Length: 86
Image (cartoon, rainbow, N blue to C red; front, side, top):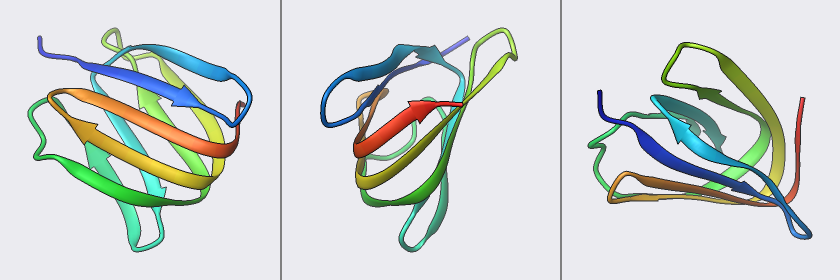
């Protein structure tokens, strides 16, 4: 099964990194779901949840605000001014 390499980073620390099968993030124009093989994306992050589904089905949630979400070559980076795992 294909996976995404994900990093959730706040201004002062890496909040979480690892592999995921899907990530859903809130941007200023709406929610975006990212699966392996998605076309490259750069979006402005809106305050809200970043939902990460791990390959085994477990889910993680991070609250994030004030930043960007970037995806290319199956690597997703959420760079936020504020972020923390819920």
